[in-house]
Amino acid sequence: MSVNSLTTITNVEFGKMINAAASMLAANADKINKLNVFPVPDGDTGTNMSLSMASGAQYERDSLETSIGALAKATSKGLLMGARGNSGVILSQIFRGFSNSMSDKDTLSARDWADALMSGAQVAYKSVMKPTEGTILTVIREAAAKANKVANQTDDIIELMAAVQEAAQAALDSTPDLLPVLKEVGVVDSGGQGLVFVLQAFYQVISGDFSEEDIKAPDNAELDQMVKELHAGAQANSNLNPDDITYGYCTEIMVQIGKGTTYDHEFDYQTFYDYLAKLGDSLLVINDDEIVKVHVHTENPGKVISWGTQFGSLLKVKVDNMRDQQQSVIDAQRAEEARNEKVATMQVPVSDTAVIAIAAGDGIADLFKSLGVHTVISGGQTMNPSTADIVNVIENSGAKRAIILPNNSNIFMAAEQAVSLSKIPVEVVKTRTIQQGLTAMMGYNPEADIDQNALSMSEMMADVKSAQITQAVRETKFNGHDIRHGDWMGIIDGDIEVVASDIESATKEAIEKMIDDDSEIVTIIFGKETKEKIAQKIKAFVETLDDNLEIEVHDGGQPLYPFFIAVE
Image (cartoon, rainbow, N blue to C red; front, side):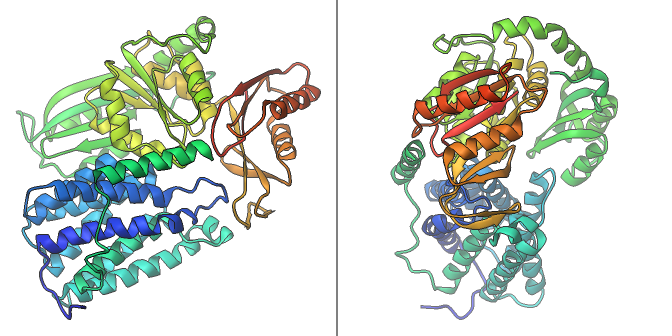
C-alpha cells in the first residue's frame, strides 16, 4: 500500500532501501550490461554495480547497530570492499558521501537526505581525476541539486524522492547530448542507468510501492554463487629521455591530522587537495579522521612537505628523483633483456616485490608467470575483481611491496582503492590490455625499488600496439562503421578500426594497420574457442608482409576474444 507522506526515515526504512537497491540492480543487471558503447560481448557495468551493491547490502544486514549513521557506515564499507569496475567504485564513493553526511544521524529528515545526496555527489566527483559529464556523475549531481531545492520547500521525503528520481531520469536522458559517443551508438550512460535504478528503489520503498518479497539482496552463499557463475561464464564464452620528465620528484607524505607543533590549519579535503593539484600530477589524496596520505609527482617536494606540516605532524616523507631512476633503467636495459627470457614453466620465487596481474585464460596466466608475475587474479572482461579480491591477494603475497597490472581500464579504480587499503606500498601500472601488461613486464626488475619498477614498466608498455578481435553482439554505427550483428571487429588501442564479415579478414586487416617501418615483433595470442590452425594461418600471412618480423604464437585460452595481437 502506498504511503501518502513521510517526514522521517528510520533504520528500518533505511535497511529496506539498501536491500531494495541491491535487488533492483540484480534484476536489471542484464539491461544495464546491454548499454555498453562497444557492441562487444563483455558489457559488465550492470554486473559490476549489482555485485558491488549486494556487498554493501550484506554488510548492512550483518551490522548489529540500529542508528542510521552506523548502518550507512557498514553499507559504505561493504561497497568499498565489494566494488568491481569503475562503475562499482564510483557507486561506492557515492555511498561514502552518504555515510559521511549521515555519520551522527539516528533518523533522517528530508533535509538530511538532501544533504546526503549532495555529499555523495561531492565525494564521487572528487574520486575521479578528470570527471566526465554525461556519466553517472552527471546523474548524481543533478539528483542532488534537485533534492537540495525541494528540501527547502517541503519536509515530505516522499515528495522529495519523487522529484529526485525524476531529475535523475532527466539527467540520464541527457547523457547522449553531453557525451557524443553515446549519441553515436544510441544509448544512455550505463552507470547512470544503474544509479537511476538505485534511486527508484529508494523511492519505491519509502512510498510503499516496493513489496516485502522484492526486498531481498543475495546472502553470502548466493553472492559467492553469483561470482562463481559469472566467472564460469567468462571462461566459457623504455626509451624516455630523463630530461623529458615534466615532474621529476615522486613525493609521498603521511600526516597525522591536527597534531604537532607545526599544525595551524584545520583540515579541509578540498582546500588541501586543490593546493597540491597545482604542484604536479599523478595526485592521490586519501584520508580518514586521523591520517591523510599524499602521493604526487612534482618539481617542488619541499612545498608538498611544507603544506602537509600546516595540517598536522609528519609521520612519513619519501622523495624519489624519477629522472635519476629513469637513467638507471636505461643503463640497465640490455642486462634486463636476458633476465626476461624465462621459460613459461619456471616457478616464480617469492620476493620482496609481488607483481599481481589480472587476466583470464590459463595460457595468458602462464605467460605472465614466465615473466616474473607472482600472482594472476583470474578475471578481466566480464569478470572484474573486487577491491577486496585485490587486497586479499596483496595481503597473502607475503611481500614487502606490490605492483598491480590491471590489464583493463575498468579495473583501474578498484586497483587504486586497493592501494589505499593496503598495509604495504603498492603501485598501479595502468595497463589497459593484456598485451600492455606482458610488455610492461619487460621493464620489471626484482632487485629495483617499487618506484623504479613502476616507472620503467609504464614506459615499456608505451612501445606496444594492441588489438583485440571479437564479434559484434548487436547492430550499431560507430566510428564511421556500419556494424551488423555477427560482424568481426578489430579493436586497436581502444578504437574499432576494422569491421569484416569473417575472423581471418578482420585479424589480417588489423595487423596490417598496426605494422609500420619500426615494427619488429608481432605476437599472436589465440583464445579458448580458436583453433591453432587458424593462428598459424595468421602467422603465415604476417610473414608475407615483412620477412624481418619476429613472430610469436601463444595459446592464451582467453574467453570472448579469439585473438589478442601485439605489435612492438
